[in-house]
Image (cartoon, rainbow, N blue to C red):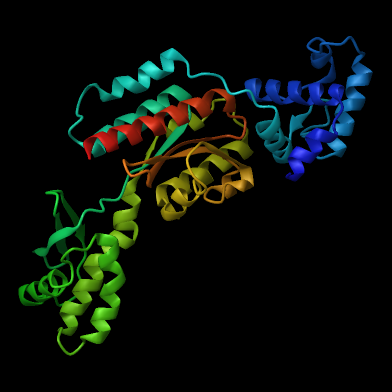
Length: 354
C-alpha cells in the first residue's frame, strides 16, 4: 500500500467527504475552496467552523494547501494522487466525445501518419488540452539504403523496407563527402542489413565500422554514422511525437506563475526531449496511467499532469502511446476513458492494417 492509500484509509468519513468535495470543486473551477461553500454540499449538517477544523487537519496531513491568506484550500500533489488512486470516479465515454474521435477516421485512411495527426487533433479538441501521440517505429526488415547528394551541405538518406514502405530524411553530411564516398557508405550498410530491422542494424554498425576499418574509407565511415544518426537523434525520434492543441493550455485567467509553467512545458514539447522515455511511462502493461506534477518525469518542471495509455499491435506488443497533458486540475474522470478509447482505437487500426 502506498503512502497516499494509507492516508486515505486513516481518514474518517467526515474528513474523507470534505477532502473529496474540495478536490472535485477545485478540479471544476480551479479556485480555492472555502468552508462556507462546503457546508452547503456536505451530506451531514455541520457548522462552517467544524469544516474549517477538518480542512486544517487535512492541511496538516499534507493533503490540502492554502495558496493565499484566505480560508480557501486547494489539494496538494499528494492530495491529488490520493484522490486519483482512491476516490476518482471514472465515467463512461461520452457518446459525443466518441463520435468526434471516430469522425477522424472518415478520410485519408491510407496514410497512417495523417490519420494519427487527425486523431491527435481530435483528442486535443475533445479534452480542451494538449494531446500527444507517439507514432510507431517502422520495424519491418530493411531492403535497401541509399544516400543522395542534394548539394554541398545537404543530403538525403533513403530507406526502402521489405514491405514496400519508404522513408527518407534530409540531413547535413560530414564535410568533404563525394559521390564515391556516399556510394561506399551505402554499399557498406547494404551488406549489413539483409534480414534486419532498423533497430537491429543500429546495434551492429559501430562494431562493424571498428572491426572493418581497413575496408571502409574514413569519409564513408563518417557518412554512415551521420546518416544513421538521423534516426537516433532529433531528426528521426522527434518526428515520432505529434503534439496538438498547445493553445488550449493558455487560459485567459492564468496567473503569471501558471503562464511561466506553461512556457516551460512548451519549451519541453518543442524540443520533444526524452521521446524514448515517453513510451517507458507506459511500462507495466496496457491501461491508462496518470502522472501528476513532479511524478511526470518528462515535463516535471512545468508541474503538468499527463494521462497516457499505450497502444499495441496485433502481437500485443506496445508500439506507441497517446496522451493528454495539461494543468494538474484536469478533469481526470472524463479524460481517462477518452484516452483509453483512443489508444484502443489506434491499436485496432494498426492491427487491421497489418
